Image (cartoon, rainbow, N blue to C red; front, side, top):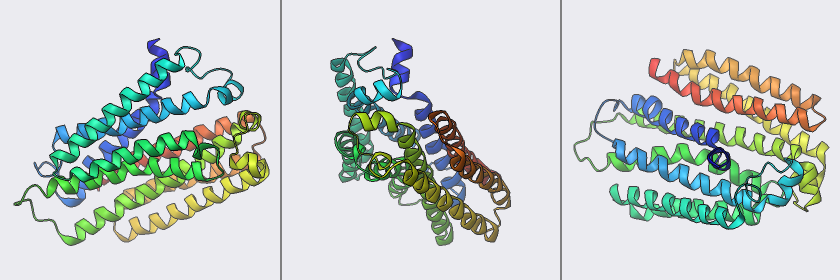
Length: 312
């Protein structure tokens, strides 16, 4: 039961989310702003609240997705969906309610602590969007993919947003140079864009991989609506957009003297090119399953690259 629970909540994905948030705050934002080691910005408790709110709401999204996907997963994943096999639908529904409540409670308390209680709506809207995605967007061409990609990128933005709010609580905060603030802002949006494109690519490939089950259950993903060939072309376009974005990013790193990052992203270039080649050659479910692993490597490389700012 415990093993099935961890499978239900997608614990490897949660670790990636936590690592990305931790790296963004402590290895990118604070070193760039010059606030590393100071008591300005989010306290440890505030950051834990933000991490818990994000993780709990993500878990609720995974659970509601499994509840809605039981029939499709029976075809695509050979009954590997724990809902309906290990957990009853009623148990899963209760877990969904509990984790949603915990996520909203943690997010609301954080918003209260930074004196921006109206921003608790972000967590409410995120939870609502995840529910609406599983209910309607998931089986709409492209729309569902974009929703998931946007939510994947949102965690980076939340770290930046609440760090700024927390800093505003200190009237005598360390003076931050405008150029440092602008640089931090650019870096956050760069990583949000990277996360968006890689997540979008992964979602499109996943839809191709799940084509049989989606078609049988009437789930109108892009692959089902327009065919596997066009879905592969779309994945290739997104992959090329990601590669082009990384090359532009490398120029940004070069002109700002972030040489370690410039050379590190050469490796990311190679991964993007490898994914493109494998996409061109893929013609069965196993090929697309392997592609998903390569795309996860892209995600991991993006997270690891944040650690290099600390040493620049």
